Amino acid sequence: MNTPTENQTKSSDKSLEAMRHFSEQYAKGTGTYFCSEPSVTAVVIEGLAKHKDELGAPLCPCRHYEDKEAEVKASFWNCPCVPMRERKECHCMLFLTSDNDFAGKEQEISLEYIKSLRDSMA
Image (cartoon, rainbow, N blue to C red; front, side, top):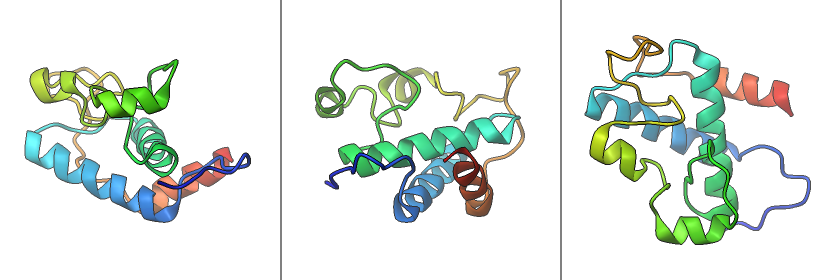
């Protein structure tokens, strides 16, 4: 597990690509779609990648945790979380069923787009 520096505000490119690839494959495998607003998808993937770097696991970035390390060990909120695996309910709006009002038509997102959004937020 990487130890985060106090100045770490963004994910490593390696983790970002891993989480992007995972997200695309998972969406295709489950018949779900990314949010119609691509920046939502990019920010969630960046959050997953940052948690992967900091905690060693892609803990859901859209929730508040009192103890992130304990949550990683419990694995309930590690992506894909239990609600997603069991009921296709993604609180982050990363994986949406086609009947969701926010679902887009995409199951892919470019690494360049995610990086550009990530870098603009840093």
